[in-house]
Image (cartoon, rainbow, N blue to C red; front, side):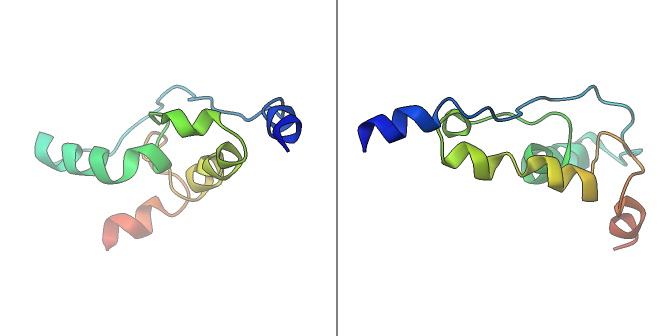
Length: 88
């Protein structure tokens, strides 16, 4: 079992953060701070990868950040469902 756990650590996981292209026109720094705290780790190119993002098999689940970014990415505004979210 230990050998298996060590072996799965060798499976590569993409933890890249592409450059920020554009952001919404925030109405205040406070609004951006709220969005940063609530959404940036999954929905921006400014993900702060926690320590467990480097330990398989948890790292495989954390890597779904890329799917979240495809649907709604604050760092590539407007993208995906961003206009719809802004209306909400």
